[in-house]
Image (cartoon, rainbow over all chains, first blue to last red):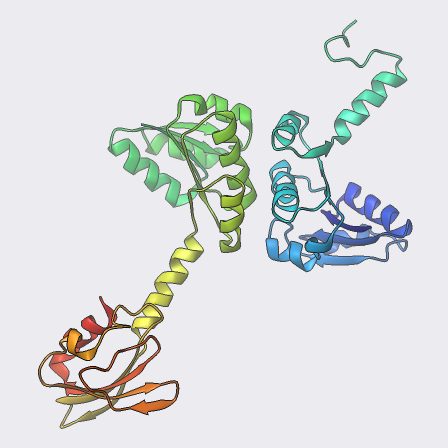
Length: 141
Length: 219
């Protein structure tokens, strides 16, 4: 698959390394060139220094032919913009945003954007490890 | 009217001052603590410290009953998402976004934020208009500057394009000597029709130039 990753933070870099080692063609975008130091030797894709919120930067990452875009920035509004542009303007088939503030989840859903919320996942994992029910509203029992 | 302004800097300050002066109810959402305090002292407006793209903040600012929301931060993604939330979540009838990157104008419209303004675009077009107007070159002065030979290049949107010289009514004492069109030299007559990008070679008295340029540029 041709995959674009917006944001080379901890999650972005780990994903890029893994996807690249699985044989996918990965382009990773970050505003800071320093961020790419987090990429390992497994990574054989391309890096673009720039703001993923700029269409010209996404075009440089060949968004027109991308099969998938993962927006992993640490700003929800930026992830929400990048994913909307990818999904509704360029028609990228698979678009997923990482949620930073759990309270923002509902916004992503309203705009029809598929999400993964690391904090929510960790929370559920903790509760499961404690053998507690993870249904909202029943945690206090 | 109830107006919500999001952002900071002089633009937000002067807008708020203007709107409150006109009797409107203004609420500002600003991210910077010190600036928020200063704004609250200077203005007869409600100032909230926080992030305008946070729905809870918008709720507190009374977005549910606001007539207009203006989002003026230096980050396009904040301006886009805030306006989207304001109009879709809170039914704010008019949301206006500052677009910093002119490339994003189209994106904002397609994603449901039709009212936008781009300062970059405004300044660029001002400059381009100005440059079009400046496409006037004084080629030479004759008789101690009483008569000038001038070249005027008609801009893309020249109001005189498509008009004949007869219709233009150039002032007395003025001669359109030559038109250079696509590298060809034309000797114009009354029925000659001007086109955009024509280079006009004009000869006339200096004091009439303002009138002639006004006719040619439509200013």
